[in-house]
Amino acid sequence: MAEITACRSCGAAGLEPVLDLGRTPLADRLVTQAGLAGPEPRYPLAVAFCPACGLVQIRETVPPEVLFCEDYPYFSSFSDALLRHSRANALELIAERGLGPTSLAVELASNDGYLLKNYVEQGIPVLGIDPAEGPAREAEKIGVTTLQTFFTAALARQLADEGRRADVIHANNVLAHVADTNGFVAGIASLLKEEGVAVIEVPYVRDLIEHVEFDTIYHEHLCYFSVTALDHLFRRHGLYLNRVRRLAIHGGSLRLYVARRERVGESVRSLLAEERAAGVDRLDFYRDFATRVTGVKRGLLELLRGLKAQGKTLAAYGAAAKGATLINYIGIGPDLIDFVVDRNTFKQGRYMPGQHIPIYGPDHLLEARPDYVLLLAWNFAEEIRAQQAAYEAAGGRFIVPVPEPRVL
Ligand code: DWN
Image (cartoon, rainbow, N blue to C red; front, top):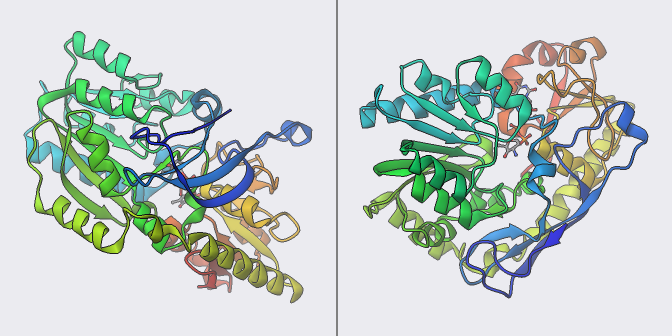
């Protein structure tokens, strides 16, 4: 494992510590029955701030092959809200840019084809690129041609040399995941057509800090972006952040419209100004984050232990990566939570990393009828509560952990 000595984006030394979550297991490395007795590696999970370019990042780099290949359990299509969100994004771009049978839409980290299928449906050629075996196989099944490999600057040059440059490049929840941030962006620059656009979604560090979303910190997420840090990153590779939208998804994200020609719009200028005013580009903005995280830890433990002491039964919803960070950092184990449920059939029958809480299908909620359910996938609270209306009608109650633990 490698600890960085300089900023992942600008290369400057002098990274400032922001938060230390100790040593944690890999958030998406769910444990099988057979694996319960086996070794389970833990890695340091510490967050730092770069005073030179404003990038927030973790210090540890776990090899991508370890994180994203075999047994990678995340399938985007298990959230209807995410499917709707992605379809609207694709259809808007198809209309705005007049895409057709001679266009090419590429997605980096295309997963199970959850987004590119909307282009296929319209007869627009696509190319997915994703190293994860399971999701790539599902994508091929629905007609989304997928290269099962990592996206690199070298692969981008090869594709460009083969004449496969893209009109649109999608990259959702992947820019924060890559060990070679600069190589990845350089790849986008060489794969994009002159008039093409890269439409990139990343979690927004401002929302993470303001809503205490410390559980979205895990080893898959190497970087936590502000518009300030992104603007530096793209310009370094001859790309321009021309438009940006703030989105509610995943606890607060940014959708970035990046191109090879500089046409910086008001949306970017005003967010850069807001960040300067709020101090997002300075260490002060992050100084009390660790204290607020400790506050959530204390508050949630008190709430759960209090309910347990009253003889209440507790379960959790969403075998999410963010759930693994939360339960392992706070120390929430099977002594407090009887089981976790998740729609993703690949996750069912396995155990949460570290705490080894068993994972079942959502039907188990109505079978076991726990008094309270901790919403680990709080970012999909609305969708999950609608789906679990019968559980709440029967008197069940949901608990959300952040920004402050509370019973809904
Ligand atoms: O960056 C990443 C984000 C975007 O997604 C990835 N590295 C991994 C993943 O993070 P996560 O696992 O914390 O994400 P989700 O999407 O919040 O996970 C939600 C979990 O809840 C999934 O396992 C699916 C499950 N789920 C469910 O069981 N029923 C989700 C919904 C909406 C449902 O109705």
